[in-house]
Length: 193
Image: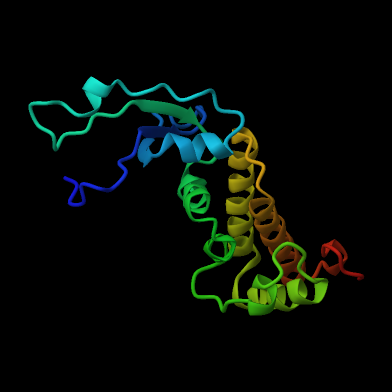
């Protein structure tokens, strides 16, 4: 029940699910309330949203019930959708970047100030902290989250410079951290061996 009658209620519900896999016969579907104008403004590869019928939106019998259309969307990485939605609504690049980093790690303030073009020194400094704290396997798991988010952004056709800068910076940090952690300094992005 909505407490604030002036609030803008969601226009649609997204039913997010992943591609079928042979090992999982039943797919998990998660529902997310959205405002179609926010999603449509960013996702160029989605067909237009259907209008909700005015009579179905607010039934006269009970004005507290709000019926909205459900839009199914198959994404390569359903678990990363909440991070993406949060960014699309708030446009907080630093918050998105930190949500991709392992929990409890120190904020890389010098890196956060220049997400659009982080210096190699800042990336290496933060990557060494991560490499000294986490195993290569844990770092790879976090890199896979960044990859999953990248897949969703690509499938949806989102062209936002800040979002792409965050993905690039996070990817660079994790690949460098993995290279440092495994002793493979030749694989470090932008660094000389």
